[in-house]
Image (cartoon, rainbow, N blue to C red):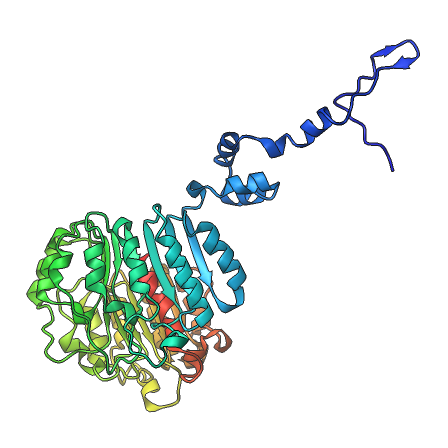
Length: 473
């Protein structure tokens, strides 16, 4: 084995006669030199780490235990996404116990129908109770309901996991909060509003997705509780909660930029806001946009144009998820929002039944096509997404030509497009990319979500929730 030279101690020019300079002991200088980096004061390390990117800081934390411990300072871990899934529970536990008490902005992506994942979710909420840094809490479940604990399968407990008692202590310091569209939590909105500090909250997600959209108990709370939330910028609610009183309660939210509304049904006896209320709302909030989302609105989809739509709504986005029917009056009325409409999304599972061919008639038999008309009249339209309905190639080309590069998102399944193969005409596969001035092609069948390919494959919650929760960001 070769001897390792200590080049810092060795001096080849210093010799006395035939005798070399005596070597120093390795027990002092060598040890000090080799352990110097591991003994840097925390203050020095923090100053160095401040200059590094997140990735470089993570790499630096691998140097030694001392560096790793110092890398876990709250100022470098302000944002954290906790992914609690059955295939990564070990990693999830590490993140939960390491950052649960120090994180500032938290997203919890978790499998709400897994007992093991729910246990880790509950543990994370417990740690949040001791976290004075927490300012933002967004829940992002896989489904709109919780798995029931084994011991409570046959019981009638409203909150068998004790989630409400864990959430409430976290709320007073929050600036942003979302219940993650979880129906079980939507019945506690009044308690949440009482615990939140109305002078702090800017983002508030109170809308839900219903497990049974035909038979459910509408959520009720005193609209006056929202009157003091004067810093609101983004708010999501269920259509059941909306009223003239609630609209009036939002007058103090001068900075409101986005109102998101989920429609599951039109309950009997509900008195929706009048057109005059929407006009007043627009005057009070000139920069606010309305995002309207209908989810599994099976029985009431055919009357939404009468019960929900109002001419003075600042409608910017409309999403129709798995309603299984088409309300043609509703679709045609979208052109009545030429100054505000930016996005149209229509999603259903693919099938060969008559309903899926609703938009397939040639232009000369059904003129104008409602989506082509919207592309022509709505000067801000930038997104068009449709799955589960056959659509003619000519109309697709027309939309591309009308919107051009202003159309940022265009999604249809290739199997849903009815290609004309007309001689002398460019196909959509050629014409649309030219008009959009970017690469474009229809979505392949293999790339579609399973529940779009077949309604019996998977759960529609898994497709819907990531999309509707993104409205809060």
